[in-house]
Length: 274
Image (cartoon, rainbow, N blue to C red; front, side, top):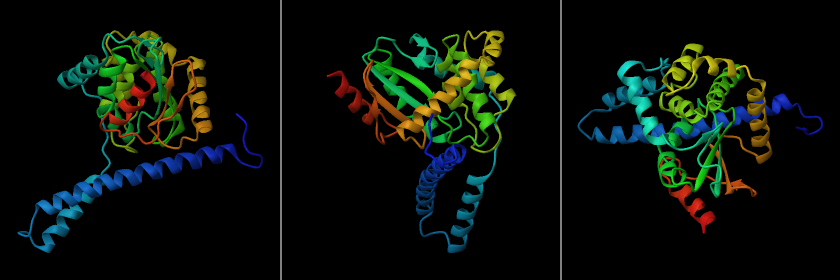
């Protein structure tokens, strides 16, 4: 990919990641502020000003605490795997694509597996889109990688390739969904080799030996790099970001759709299906 003369491409990528992280933090802060405001209003006029201050301090400290996550095991692991299976079982998969290859509409979804806003989308708008449009053969969704939330490039590479390696067995979307369902707190360092292995063990039917070998496939690393180049050309600076269009045609940006409910996606899809 060419770069502007006199511009350091590494610095440009770093600035893009920092801008995306700042945008996401601002959005998260707004959500947290609204939640805190509601909780404080519920306290009413009964409590004194000192109590209110204490509550605010406790909420702030609790929200910023760093928590590490271990992959669920036993009943909890079964619960998460069952939820993912119920959503996507029986839908065709191929590599990073979920849905019928001949579906008339294509959505390209650019995400970072550690991105909490992507998790909001995964648990919010996405299930309805999958059930209404992907399962019925009208839409296929391609998952693409864009580093925004993950602090360490090596960790980002490892986690995204781990998902793509599951895609070599046409089980990539199980891995993606499980990652988001069991996502830990950003910047807590929860994405370890043990975490990645634990997710793989939850993917139904995944051959772990073949999956481990596929993680060294250079074409998967090239795919992650290619995704970043595409995102850069499209001007994407945050995740999730989306391109949508008729399959085989030119895809366009889907600007700022609601992530917790499907109305924005439904409107765009329905327009392309008419």
